[in-house]
Structure formats: C-alpha cells, structure tokens
Image 1 (cartoon, rainbow, N blue to C red):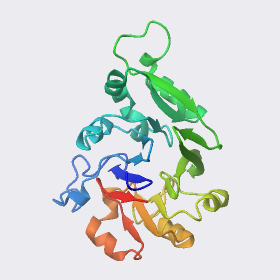
Image 2: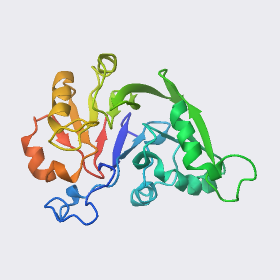
Image 3: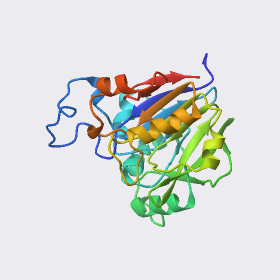
Image 4: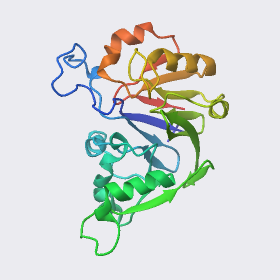
Length: 257
C-alpha cells in the first residue's frame, strides 16, 4: 500500500438509514447516490491490518458491496443496534478464516453482545453460529497486529461511547459531548470525523452547527460529518454551506493519509 492509512466509509446514515421507509421527503426521494446512506461504519486499512469500526444492520451488504473478504477485527463504539446488529454475519469470515472474529468492545458492550447474540455463547452451541473473540478495552491504547488504536471517550446523552484514533485519523460518532481531555488527544489529527444527524438540536447527537464548531476549534486539515439523517437536507446543498475544510461524508467515500 502506498499510503499509511486508507479509510472507506461503508455507511454514513443514522439508525434508520436514508431513505427512510415510507418517507416522501426530498432527501428520501432523491436520485443522487450521495443521498443514499447505509448505517454508519468505516473500514480502516493500514500496512498490516484491516478492520471496521462498528457492524450495523447493513454489515453484510457493506462487505459485499466493497468486495471485502477478510478483516482482522471489528471495533465497537457502543452497543446500540445500528452499530452491532450485523455481528451475526461474521459467520462468513469465521468459515473463510477458520477462526473466531476479534471484536473489540468495552465491558458494558461485551455484555450487550452476549445478550443480543446469546445463541453464540454458553454450552451446547448450535453449529454455524457466529464465533466471536471478545477483546476488552478501556481507556488504554491497544494494537491490531502492529496498528496502534487509541480509544476516545465521549458521551451519547448519558451513555459513554468510544471513538478511536488511528495515526492522524480520529472517528467519533453518536455523541453530543466530547470532553476536553478527548479534544486534546485529537488536536493534532489531520482528519477528524464527527457525527451530526441534522441541523436542529438533538438531545443525544451533535447538530450540524455543533459539529462544525468543534471542527473549527480543532482545525484539522479535513473535517468530515457522518451519521447523517434525512432531516439534514440534500448532500450537495448542505456541502455548499460548510467551511472549505469540512464536508459531509457519503457512502463509498475514501480518504488516504
């Protein structure tokens, strides 16, 4: 690989995705590929590793759409369904790799995974269930192969969520508050990805202006907005309103560092 890190946005939508079932708004009826969003996830590739951040309900299709036939693990930001519901589909990787899939999650999220996928744990396991190798992390950095991963703390209303820093790339989704200690940890990142669901205030997510304010404070080379709902507006129109170094993500978008 010619570049140190490559990031591909597998999905950039909120929990409902875009278009939303039954919605006739301009965004949901748009024919632009930039207004069609699967649930949020990214693929990160380095010189020696390839992994996703989150595995939502669209995980299977995301792997097929990008022709991904091997990953070294999955990082979990938090245990809401739009971020873990696709974990059952690691079964294909289990079969191909002949080993369990490493899933990196905090203790609370591991417990949630065990509840949601109870059939994959315990005694007398049914043949063909997904096989997970749960890897616990806290605030300390850890490695996937030789790639250093730094967890980043943020809040999703009252729920603590994990962002991640890989090299000079930072990814923090599903948050309405990033503490100063986390901002300090990403102050020198070249690319910062934050979530913003819409322009109007939201109790557990950044609004667009709140995310822009954080990015203008940090001033990375590139600021990217993800986890976008149909209430945000048309991709092309919203992008025109943003500062030059900030843009909305879209499914299939690639960046290299």
